[in-house]
Length: 333
Image 1 (cartoon, rainbow, N blue to C red):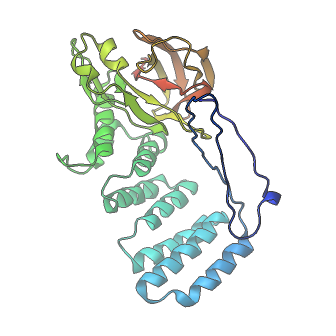
Image 2 (image 1 turned 90 degrees about the vertical axis):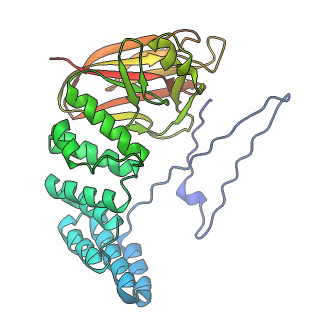
Image 3 (image 1 turned 60 degrees about the horizontal axis):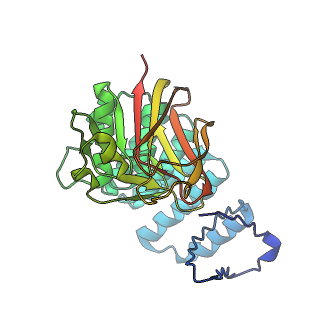
């Protein structure tokens, strides 16, 4: 994939509905693929927000309507940076509709902005409970808040989880596995795009979590016939196909030194040079114009000082889709 970025100037858009047409022209019978991503950022307009609210007010009937009205008032205050005032409105929304999820999420954001991380965590937990403990974004927020802001241990976080169940949501199981491995004090090994795996030497690999965008890929069942851990891990991958402002991994970690290793391979192409990208970890370019091997595994690693509570791994497109097969993280004592 070769990404092209086009900027649409506001002056080119008319009031009301606009239509963006994208056409791909095929040449010499070679198939083409288009992935269109529209990244829009609407500037805050206080007058517009207030006007929309006033138009909605006559239609806010019953408890549900009043709950939505209180929520919208809270969003206007939050967008204006008045977090304390917004909290009052969101509390009113919950008083009228106790089963709402979104007010808890916004309350968590407001309390976090006011540095009240304990209340923020409480509201995120309530949002997760009402959402069936299944929403990836909420899980990521909760984990980042607990590890980075509240500085809770993995053991303390595990105690806050609901009782483990066989039919629990997939992402809950991934977070639980991550915290269990972190509590053990050993290496965290994530099988990117694949399932949990135990190697022939007893090394345990968990399903990945804290990824930003991307898609699971690789060869299904490849780990079942693999004769080594390296062979098993290279058969799965997370690849990043969509042109997006941010993709990769944002892994919450307590401040400290960590040895980070990326396991790189390519099970899709059979010829070298078909996939090229840059690898960036903690704003440091580990590899520029990197071409993953079509046979075997490359292990690219370095030790990093994590000060902000988050390990950032990103990839820059050059040719085709960046991918990664595995990630290992080990605390350096």
